[in-house]
Each structure stands twice: as structure tokens, then as C-alpha cells.
Length: 288
Image (spheres, rainbow, N blue to C red):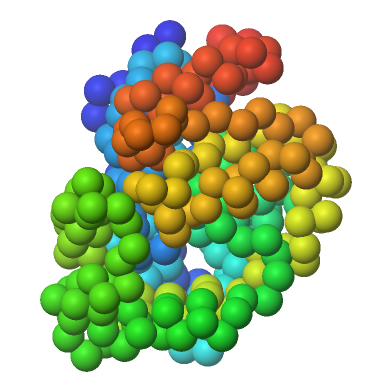
């Protein structure tokens, strides 16, 4: 089975929830892609069509206040409760049945949080670059996100990048790559003031209450780790801790010195496809 060549855009209505904009590629059973904070739907498999060509339907959308999606309506927020509600809307409209969830960073946390509430409603989860241990963040961590949010509010993309540069701890050989990727993605957001608020609220929101909760998640899980030299915001030790707690987890990642697997859309997609085969999930064996 092969996926369609072009993505079909979709839009989910507003009202008491923000209008979400996304796209679907392919015609098989769904894999829903969830991006990280300050990213957009482009930044999960990075445009790779490998999975859609293998027979899966890739559904991706911009989280509230990110990319092309609207901010939260008056009185609404940006914590993981709201992100779970938005994901539920997307699943109902675009991914019925038992989809797979594939999320990076904030999207990884959203996927795990949703899976804990709906363990029987999913076929599996791909968890890329987890950061949270399910514990309240330190004051230093909150101050970090507040400085980035302040930079965005006061100076737009340039203000954010000035604040980001002061915080950047990436090893020298990766610094230019990280700078370029971050600058490119920050230019894609329609609502920077709302994004700044989302950054503040997400820093103070927990996807679950402690890593022990993950032990109850009886789902096939692929945890994707990065080495800290190139990607210190997503500590490898956290990914390893998640994989140890999840009952059906497999841990993968790049070799030391390589570009993070999370940044390589084609290779990441092939790793996901191989894992799906190992756990016995084939698009030809499932209803679309």
C-alpha cells in the first residue's frame, strides 16, 4: 500500500476551543504526530513520507498558539489538560479507531499523558525526547522559560533568539545547526504573544504525577533518546528512565557523535517502521 503524494489540509472548528490547523498524508491506519513547544507540525518527522508510503496515514497539527493554529480563547489555557483535549478532538475527527501517537518533547508528554487516560484506545506510542520526570520544575527551570518568553514578547523572533543564545549550552560543533533550526521554526508562528504565554504555562504543567505512573501504561512504546552533546534540552538519562518504567518499551537513538535521530526525519521514520514490524503492527493488517 502506498500513501498519497500530497498532504490534505484540515481545520477543526473554534468556539470554546481554539481552531486547530493540520494536514493528513496517506490513506492507511493513522499515526498522529505531536510536535514540541515552540515547534510546529513540520518538526516531528521533518517532512518525511516514508511512513505514508509504507501504508500509514500521517496526521499532524499545530498545537494551540503554535504555527497556524489559534491561541486559546478567553479563559483558556495551555497546560497538558488542554493539550489532551485538543488531541482528543483531532483523534475524533481525523484518526478514529486505535491510532498510534508519535510525539516529540511537549508532544511526547502529551502522548504519554493521553495514553495514561485512554490506555485501551491506542495501538502504541512513539515517545521522542522526553524531558519531564513528572515532578514540579525547579525555580531555575521556570526562570529559563520565563526569560525566553520575555524575549519573544518584547522583541519578537529576534528577541527570543537573543535570549535563547544566552541560554544555549550546546557543544560547539552543533551550535550553528541548533541556532539555524530554532530560528527557522520560530518564524512560523502566527501568534507570538500567545506562544509566549503557552511557554510559561507549559513550564508549570505536569503531564503526569511521577514516573511511577508510566508503569501502568501497558502499550507498545518506542522511546527515542538523544545524546546530550547535541541536544541537552532532552537529556538522555530521562529517556532511559522512561524506557525503564514503561512495561513494553524499546529504547533507540543515534550513536555517540552522530546527529540526533530526532532531527533526521527519514531515518527516524525508518526506525519507527522497523519497530512497528517487530511488534507485529502492519498497516495491511489493520483497518484504516
